[in-house]
Figure (cartoon, rainbow over the protein chains, first blue to last red):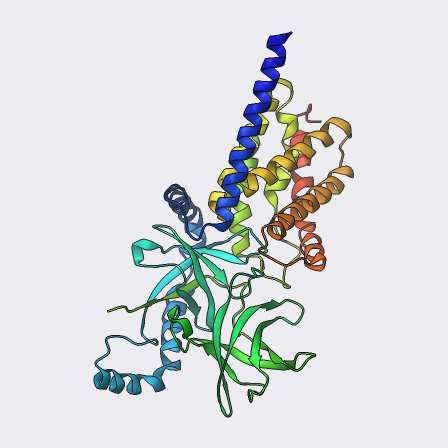
Length: 265
Length: 163
């Protein structure tokens, strides 16, 4: 009788410990800024398997090289007008690097992560290629996201369309009377447009203004193209403006991307 | 055949996201959740003394799913075990046929979406939006119901005791 009860309690204890362990790991995973060593190792093993499985789907794709070259050239051209100026200033100030300098690293999208709410995808380049957290990811249509987690062979890219309220990018809007700064804060799925909040109410902005990364805070390179302003709205208390921006990128068709690695020396 | 079904469901759940829209507001009616269908249709293969094996299988499936597709570890262990619990209840208490299979597939997909969504809201990662939840649920029914019907038909033909 007693041994039966004891056994039942032991079983409950084991189940309780297991539940606690699983829940702790879940909480850790939700809030950890990067992969742990074990996570990284297992992720890399899965990447090798995924690459093998995807091989028949990608081997005949001729779009690959074309898209990769295009994205680099287009982004280079956006900043072309700055190139000369940068070179002159660098000489003048004896600077080693500026905010607009970066090295492009090409990668292939292996899968859309199944967390629909977070809008992330996995690419086949990681620490081995020199990638780090918070590096920007572009295509030939402009900015698409930033790296949120990195393992040795792969990285997780959080798209700019994410619902995640913790993901924000500082942006710059080129208006007719000068630049304004604001925060890219998610995606309006009804309108199909990116949402920019916190724009100064006195800023002179109009439809068609170009939106780029601001480079403020030193986390991202400056001047990466995002899209064009489609709609300007004032908030109901007239304290700030909200912009709706159209990105040319079809986020359902991202197969090859370029990661911008900042030059540090 | 069971193993082929499991491998097919696991791999195609990931591969198909590269080819079908998986973007907010633009989901197609072919959003795959084959793994949920897989967990739902498997209990008849794990009867009586094999029941524990089913639980272990689902837990391992969840771990692998998180490693491959989500990067939020243990989330799908919990979610898939929840789906497995409901699946077992359904198979024990309801007589399943070609009409009830789609109904319960839709319910289980709904349970999965609601639980996963609640997890994100609980951890303060996204803001609450019932509209988005219903949108996602509505767009993940057709393809998975076809998948469930197809495999139910195949299992029924191949294994006469499949019930």
